[in-house]
Length: 110
Image 1 (cartoon, rainbow, N blue to C red):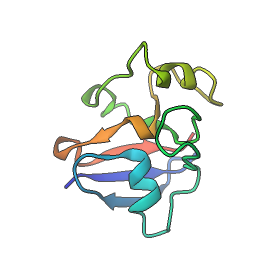
Image 2: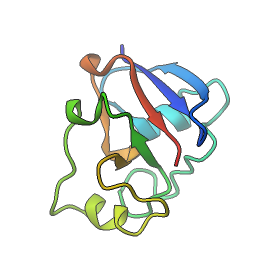
Image 3: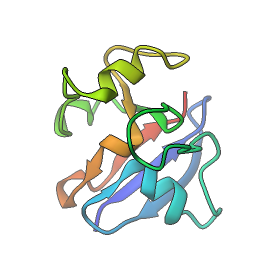
Image 4: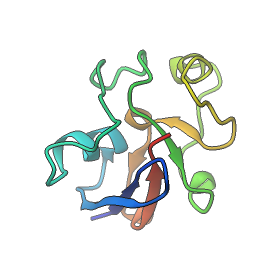
């Protein structure tokens, strides 16, 4: 069961959440947080990678340990239009699926 730590814009921890394997970062924020949801992750489209409202920065230590952005998929297009896009860290949380090997991953709300 992976743990994910959510950080705010300043880098302070909002919450660390245990989630079942095969849960997305967006689902962890919306459905597994004790706070009802993680502020800054609205997930308007529900996980379709078409809105960018689950935009997160994946911590540098983890960015190469997750599945990369599909260069031909909708996530790449959406990310190019989100506010505070960072070419190396930005991801749509709905497209980052957590597995046991991601235990300890950290993401920040831009």
